[in-house]
Length: 115
Image (cartoon, rainbow, N blue to C red; front, side, top):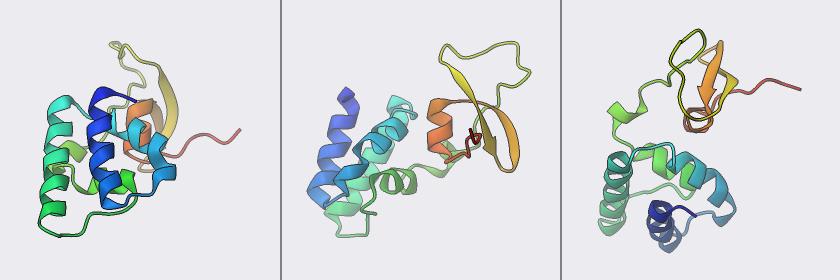
């Protein structure tokens, strides 16, 4: 478990999150920068403290509390000369196939090729 994920997971578990989704939530969480993670954690913590609704599915809780500017579309690396230092995979985003990082595939709930 990543060091920052431990904190958000403990917060969500204390709220009553669905524990079977821990791996999906961690992978989704790791797709955000440290500053984005801090903003999401703070938003969730403040909502819980105020008694406001926080989704019990951890991926949705994280997504719903990400600042909207963070949720801009993913980078399609198909045809790009500069590639990321992580593996990229074929996935469909908004009806078009492209090459994306695993973090973006999870973050944006992309469709994967059928085998």
